[in-house]
Length: 171
Image 1 (cartoon, one colour):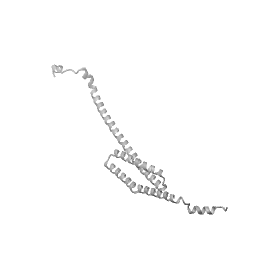
Image 2: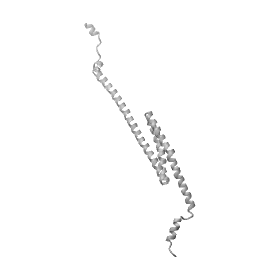
Image 3: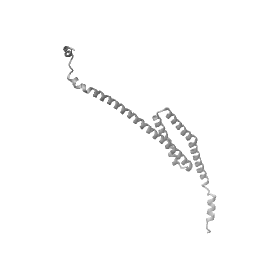
Image 4: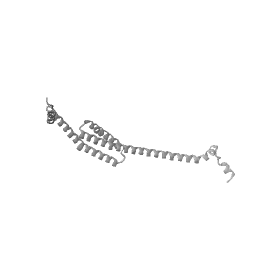
């Protein structure tokens, strides 16, 4: 090469001389930053999926608890005839429906939605074909018993009369 060609080439500026050694580390740092941001985003998505799954599991547990509460309240009323047992039954029905709606919103797959619909249908069938008829029968029996007490309360029972006569002291 001739001296003229070497001198005709422009000499690098001071900025280029000072920045050139930092170009590769800067490019590597930028690449690492992009990869870290991607990893953080993936971790955030995984965390959200985990939290959603945990919420779904809690709602499924609550569904089972509400069904148990409904059954216990219905059974308690049928056995005892006390209206206090119907409150947990009614509360359980409301909480069950709320859990079903919440779980439907969090369902991820069509199979989950389908299974949820099947569970809802099973509980509705139990309520319509078993719980409600048994509650009606128990209420009817309580009403019949109350009416029969009204008619018989005017007359003492035969056992009461016999006991009274046997225990009566001579005057």
